Length: 304
Image 1 (cartoon, helix red, strand yellow):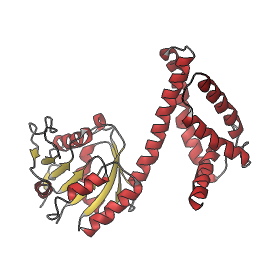
Image 2: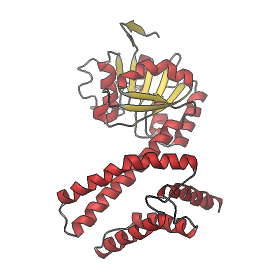
Image 3: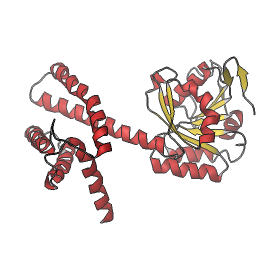
Image 4: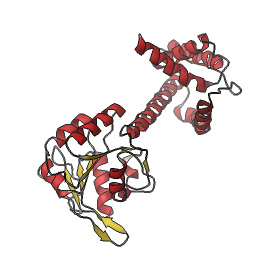
């Protein structure tokens, strides 16, 4: 199977396995970039306008794989990817598999081993932006795995848009970035909704609270960059704020929320880490120091 040069763009047959919202967005972006697109989904009725725009719906996974040069999977999890690909035991010669399914780093590495054992050229990836950004300059996708596979699909994957970053040969690296970023997002969302619950319990109107809450959010980018530098150097000065002051502040939040019957389990878990840091003599240090406290606690629990 060969690609066809069309002006400055090489037109490559692409197959997309999985037509959830992200899968449809990916297929749409490949169509917009004028790649021939074949799609497959376990359940029918998910193609939207893709067929009207020129996509072809395969009747089987095997047929879908054979139709593409670059095979993109975007399914619910890695188990679904493996179960789906098991339906196409052959026909992988001169084809590359790009897995954009969300999962865990260990799963990505195991998937790479599985693919290698089946003679499949494999690249793992993580989409960091929502579906409306796919195909636009705002899209961001991370890739990791065999360098030769990345080079083979790099031009085709530019159809996804925006920034595509190759992170190296470890197939779990893209997933590692994704889960860490999801950690940040999940805990941030929990903080937002918990803060709204507490403000509401104190009779504060949501809009009034939001006007000040956005200011808190505005502090985070600089804090993230500063923490990264401190973690690199191992120096955690308490010149702006200290772990001891954080212990006092979070106690006030927990006590107030508890008085209103609001669940404080997440805050209590955070306070436990802060208290351990203070007990270990880090109370006068900056908040970035909590990163190593978290890791040390995890290691000690595993060893026990």
